[in-house]
Length: 255
Length: 255
DNA sequence: CGCCTATTTGATCTGATTCAAACAATGTGG
DNA sequence: CCACATTGTTTGAATCAGATCAAATAGGCG
Image (tube, rainbow over all chains, first blue to last red; front, side):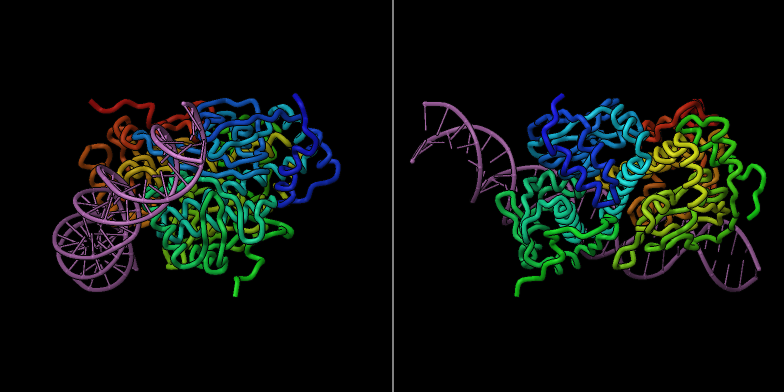
């Protein structure tokens, strides 16, 4: 069990984006012993039916949470970015009802459920924040459900990209109008419940409208206002408190 | 503030279906002062954007949680049955990112957020159970998302009805193979993200296959095994602990 | 009985899927 | 540094699941 200095920084930043942390709570989180692990793209981190005894936070890369149908079709039910703790529900529910997968090469920081138990016992407020974190996660799932059920593909895609941009901005991974987004269109189609071909065509619509560029694993938003309007994106459901630097929606469109 | 004797019984039963309650915790829940309220079909209970200061449990009837698109299309993101506490997230997140609606005439039991604060402080284990409850809710949302994204309409509908039957059975509202289910097909279509016409046609498929009957607001399951197979229904995601009486899947198919 | 609301049926349309092939990018080893 | 393999993106054509529109029945219920 090693502990790289500041490893938990991103996670703390993420938690602070949804609530207040007391200094001693931050201290305790920093002191949490973590074990880093690196995984290749499309490797399973946790499998459906597993009973994990550890949680992890994402340090680098993107992870997806997935369910697979009887005919082998995959649906992502969430995408987690650096700073997130994807399997807090594994902690609460004990048994996984979905798999967790590395969507890109990832570095994860593992820590024991027992350590979380200890933290939550010592700092009830921290427990509240973790609870809040899971509820927020559920709010995102509801929006995905809504978009899948009642929005056309282009709207859904636009909303998805706004959400990703916002989540990444919270942890400082957006630089001006651009951010690295190394997913394949196939993976995006699994998130949106569409076919890869249709994602490709919807994407071309967004490009044609001059809303964004996406090449070499980097997305550049050319018209945030337009993209958010098209996607009917209102970040309220992300329940972000405080300001976020390099927030795409803060910047104006180019002239 | 009145308190009808045993009003919270259903809620307690529901909570006990997902975890253990200590006698003093049960006692505290029973002593929770509640204010009953009755609402007509399709009335809003909580609106998107509200900052509620109360929670409620469902005593009778069905409530839905809904989001509405820019073009006025409605998507239900959850359906809650008696015993459920639909807006625990209003308690945790403070501001509602979706509306809560009476899908049938309902009786609700309201109680203050401050009372929950008090309970959670006095009984950390109860807090854990409520946390667990919200996470479980999220698990159901994920399954809805999966079914909407990757399953055909008939499968989705079959799964939905299995889920409803199971949730109702937990609180003793299933009698043998039958249970009251007073939703319209229109409302079901809002839950499944389909059109009412298509729900009607999918339903006819299920009837034609002899899987169920549905008339006068009552569903009778004729072939649980068949319905569950068609819907790829595995109740594991409901994380029910202990046995449930009048559980539809416990009973055999008729000869 | 008559009104209102829900269910059912029919016909047509369309957004999205599927299948298949071409094209572009990226990486790998010689 | 190039040839080749691999993986991802793009295009085209055919098909289909599910939506939409419209009208006909069937249930409640005052």
